[in-house]
Length: 313
Image 1 (cartoon, rainbow, N blue to C red):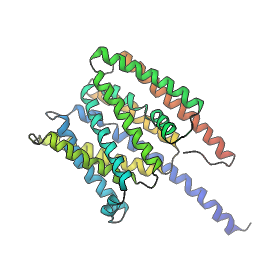
Image 2 (image 1 turned 30 degrees about the horizontal axis):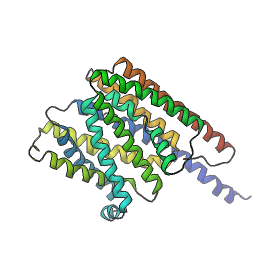
Image 3 (image 1 turned 60 degrees about the vertical axis):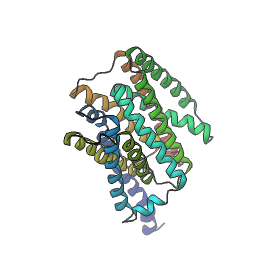
Image 4 (image 1 turned 120 degrees about the vertical axis):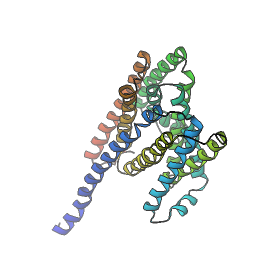
């Protein structure tokens, strides 16, 4: 083997590590940015869920459109129009998901909401098994059972504390995210960014109808909506989508847990909103289950890479 051939074979390997390292940095930054959502919500002064949805979704649409313009070199409109029925359906699912997420934050603690959302990987796995005929490993099944226990503890605790509705909305949110993931997985040609743009459009229309007689909000609340929708959701999700192309599913799961674990801490430190004892127990069970499963998957991926086999995504 000559030097040129050796160099050409080694070049991809040298390129992979910087890409993966950059992707991990993007995921950490993305998770940290998005984790402030609960804290932003708790700092609104005089605004209801419909108004938040309206201004937040407009800001999200603007941010996604700008990212698409950069990504497609001016072809954002063409990209949005090309997503087809599956992309529109994915956008509609995300719209329902985002609105149920807002209802969860309005009616239960940030901790309960985020702990419930940490079950997304298992709900996705169950739906992929049911609709896409993907297999479930024993580790996944065991982790799903443990997660169900943790969520049950939080739901029962919520019934006694008067936040059952918020906990149910959080579970609907998790199911919605998982449905979106399954739609994208079964239609891999879909670019998630235009689908997110469509979700913002749907939310804007629905929330406009819901708040048509009270669109006036304070500058303070408007700026928080722009921060949440345009910067945190728009830029944060854009980073996530870019990073997801270079990381395996288990790595994405671990970095997502950073958001779910830190978000309750922000409102605890800055607003004084702390979870109940049983909600904390349930949350620890859920997050631990997801983390252990992700670490097991990463161990398996590393062994496959050493043997020269591709790592599953």
